[in-house]
Amino acid sequence: MSAENKITIFETTGFPNPARIRAALAEKNAMEEVDFVEIDVMNKEHRTESFYAMNPLGTVPVMRTAEGDFISESTAITEYIDAHFDGPSLTGSTPLERAQVHMMQRRAESMVMDAVGTYFHHATEGLGPDLETNQCSQWGNIQLNTAKNGMLYFDRHLANNEFVAGDKFSMADITLFYGLAFADFAKVEISSELKNLIAWRKRVAQRASLSA
Ligand SMILES: N[C@@H](CCC(=O)N[C@@H](CS)C(=O)NCC(=O)O)C(=O)O
Image 1 (cartoon, protein in one colour):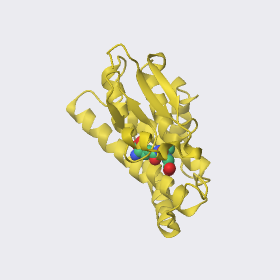
Image 2: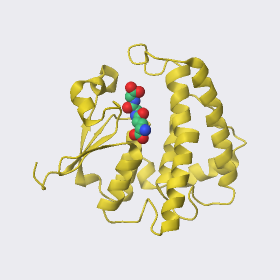
Image 3: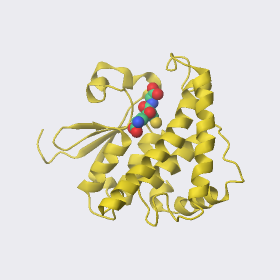
Image 4: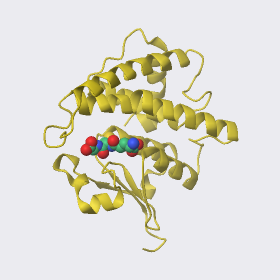
């Protein structure tokens, strides 16, 4: 594969993790710099030998670099995009900022995004009986509680912080934003008492990268 190939993002429209990549690309003004390939998750295209060769975990998104390397995990892809394209940093510039963004991103992921995902896949019909073949509803409901506690944690955190990782927009905001979008989709209530979280969400939703 030659260097003039574009980066390719393998994604599934409307799914929350691929949406994180689109947001990162939009923040870097790089949407036109990559190709997108749709993966038909509902028809198990992500559970084929050729997909497992790109990502053994069988999840979207996956990125193929211009040189032909495959990267999965939304955070890893975002880190690549952030370093590869010009524009404001999404992962922090100083050692402290980088550590803070990483820490808060991981919290947004495990306390909200992944917790909602586990509830959705294990304690609801999820993607339907063809795809959800290994459900554990008890674990799903425990994670529902994790998600609710996570939202409460971020509500308190955002009382004193403009953004998730301090005073600059970062990939931690992108993860929390799509974690809440996933919550809406999975019908996990975002309590109206979480005023700071709701105000933050309204504020960041105005960014062009998140309003698509
Ligand atoms: N930790 C992964 C999670 C990726 C993930 O769970 N993607 C979902 C779509 S949002 C998926 O591929 N689901 C397929 C399935 O559950 O079978 C990341 O950050 O990219």
